[in-house]
Length: 344
Ligand SMILES: O=C(O)c1ccc[n+]([C@@H]2O[C@H](COP(=O)([O-])O)[C@@H](O)[C@H]2O)c1
Ligand SMILES: Cc1cc2nc[nH]c2cc1C
Image (cartoon, rainbow, N blue to C red):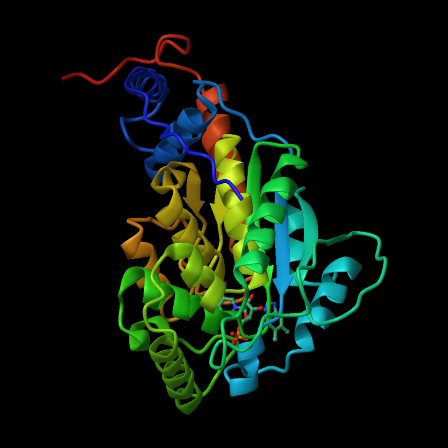
């Protein structure tokens, strides 16, 4: 497996040109706030002063987690495959929000513990029927982890469009994501764990102990790919691969909640320039997400107390992306509209 180098989108001349284009629009300087930052970022990602949003798509990666045997989720494992069926039937929150925003969804079986058979609309990239229990042994072998990353690269190469939103589904995956966060940011496990699908306070303490014991068991694992294989999940590894390839292709990456951001933590350790390509959709109410975002110096767009996953935050910020490119491409300038500029 080869991870290709990513280049930063930094381009001083283009940044100046975008700044001029934004400042010449008929509005007080800076008055479109975060939308101005977004417009500039999308312009830099696409290397143009006239960026577009073409064929946006949301990829929902599903996988199961052996660590659920430790009682770390409020819901049973079969909810993962049952929700995949719900995605395929169009009845989940992500289906509703993607439809509302004319956005395609692709559901990927990265490693669900269920035999779906041939299913229209389901992209079968199953590495295995769920990871192993990392409280006992590494979640994945090195080969399984590399296979998941590579399938992520390939998926992105097949995807049209220049904006890709990430989403996931996997009972137990907040435990995997919290373990990755603990290992990759150095934050204490107690600051990385949260209620996930709705664990009780006692359940959250148990989740913390499971992570702390597993980290002691797998002491010495430090390389980001080894950390991913030991504590991660197939959907998390496949997202990390897809993010790396998406950025290499200069697609804009929409980062959803706690689990999607944990995949980015891995990708950013491998290729820090990936952060230039990321829009952080929202700050999840999962306990560790705010700290995880701070670690990445990320400023999320929305604060809606979401903690659903599926890519729902990614879908909900699509109108903001459209607004950013539309104001840049369509607003009149002071000179074209013959509006007087500021007096000083
Ligand atoms: O995206 C988030 O921030 C988020 C926060 C909490 C839970 N989730 C979703 O809930 C599931 C994992 O929760 P759990 O408690 O089973 O680890 C998984 O399917 C995620 O999509 C997602
Ligand atoms: C019902 C349900 C839907 C979900 N969507 C993402 N994670 C989920 C977890 C549960 C339990």
